Image (cartoon, rainbow, N blue to C red; front, side, top):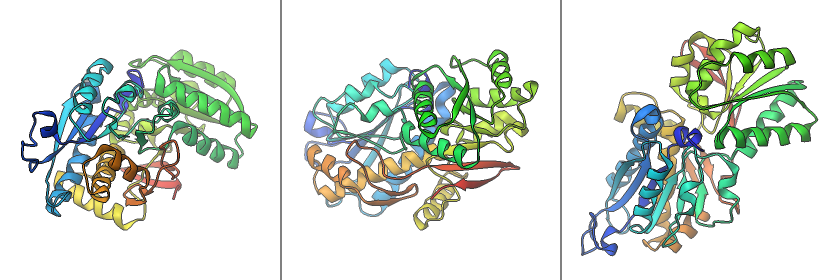
Length: 378
């Protein structure tokens, strides 16, 4: 996702690594040192909230695994987080570093979902923690797996909901980047298949904070529902300005870019009644999810968000694959990931032939006062 999901999705590279095998690092020449999980994520700047959440979730999974005895007959795990500065070229350098030093790499692609996808020296399995752009898993790269639901399935879910509600006229505003364009492309296709009409389609550049022209055009089109595909900062600015154009009572659905507390903090009361798509919900009724939330709150003093949960889940899948493979051989770890059937806070995760997860999305309504409810979900 170009600065788009480069930003929202902070490329997090979690690498289960035997650095000693490549002549350095913390592994130690005797092979008894810790296996390093290398994380490449945006830990500074405007996107730090996402990267820090990814890191905190992954760190919790590592600490839990170590407390349970580690992997491979007692080997401990160590999380190393590198800051990509929300810059694709920096992220690629980090991915290359870990790909040549690791036996397994779990990668959370950012707003620009594709850069690290080409980093396959040594054939390292990669797990994308937050990237939703469908192109990521359509390149035929068998080493890439994804934790979130791809935008094609997210779009299908939201259009199904719109159709069930009787909405016929769709308004769309989206970021002009990989994340927003991928979502818009998928929404258009799903709407056409469902027989719904896209009456307005407006774009903006990431970083914009003034949306009068776009909202005016959408208002003139008189939609039954508006879909907004944007990072949380732009999404919050848009939803605050919609009342200037008589759109405050039109049903409003955000992408997973709004699935973070920062969206409500920035959008304030204007977010009440808004719905957003998510790959996880704090209210998801699952023992694993409840245990994760409790452990996260005890460790960090606040509730996890979607991005912390994706980081935790990605690390958990990697750790369990290493245990299942009973080796640090990358091919064996990759095969164990592909065969995963694992209970996680996001649901029971398994992967299809492209490497995408086999579960659906949640549609969550913001009620105000810190309360939310799941409208549609598992």
